Image (tube, rainbow, N blue to C red):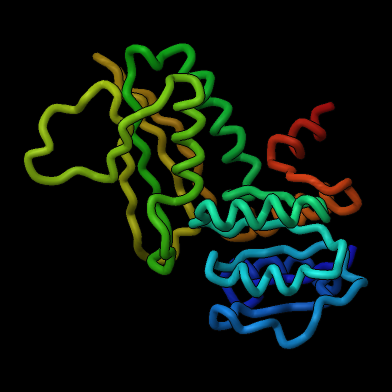
Length: 242
């Protein structure tokens, strides 16, 4: 499998390159927005692995044009325009999208759905996420996905980003996010389910970026050669257990 890394000089781009070794045949750093990549993507590339920033996706669009290379993206902080781009790409190629490439995080989301179904009427959810000081978005994309897993069972929440001052009593329909930043923490997510007289805490902590790099490479192997369309961690994990 021949791999191109987009966002090659970022933390995750370097981690993927270290794990992929000689499979990497092309690298592109993130350029100023609107600056086309210097070299067109070779038709020999099987998969583009993207760990960049949303503002670089115009360049990624240029890079992908005219090729059938699959795309694996773990870029966070996406808005509607980026989701629209992803849907456009998926007409021509298989696109694997996950805001967290850890299989453990996927399982954490499944556990949260079970907990919501069994406890949600009497418990409240607060999400604490911890990342390195260089992370630019908060709350993390993973925290938002975990919140959506809870809301998929419980219905819409009133999302609160931290609390300060005279915030008043917590409303039953609130879902709180708390973002901690500093040091070199690759990523940790704590789900605090708070009930009367008891508290359940579900936690996932990545010990290094290698976890996410290996997950991205596993996704690349899964999606390469697939028909055009959007693919997720759910698709890959279900395939493993068939």
